[in-house]
Image (tube, rainbow, N blue to C red; front, side, top):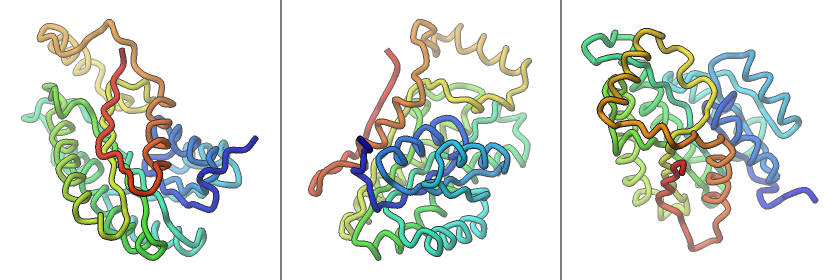
Length: 250
């Protein structure tokens, strides 16, 4: 039997072409929602939308560009008619010591991981208010609790996202918009480390292992675990909200 607990709802998932974003979009679509997928690269985006089928709308956009975000949400309103769920998943984690970070590295990390979420929330709130409420899920990382060297910028942007989420919870409560922070542990998400320099990655893993920052006994979680957590958060009954979901491999 088709699961229609989200029938009639519209969701938007950033970073929706692969990894946690794609798994989340698939879970929301299986639950009956129409899903807009936002991603920068057209080929994997088109493939992801094709996998989901008629319930998916592919939108090529860079969340660090406020104009592109504005255009994406305008398209969702125009073509899908409403917005009920926003999942801020898009993130990049470039591997470097901060002294070696380029201007482009810093702008990309802050722009995608933090400013992108702000831009998306700014556009989502009026659309959600128009339908009487909504759900915002911001995906964070256990890196905020154990900031790793070589990923200091990534951890800092996720820490900012967590503070932003706490403030949003209070700000948007009167509008019936629930805000959930999903803090993810190690996940087998394709693509997160695809741009890492192999030599820097070898050095970083050596340092992490020496300092006891990585537990190599725990296998990464499949992306479906995080997707199901998002689905759980956005299907809570009225009067209940999940402020924090902290999920780690065991």
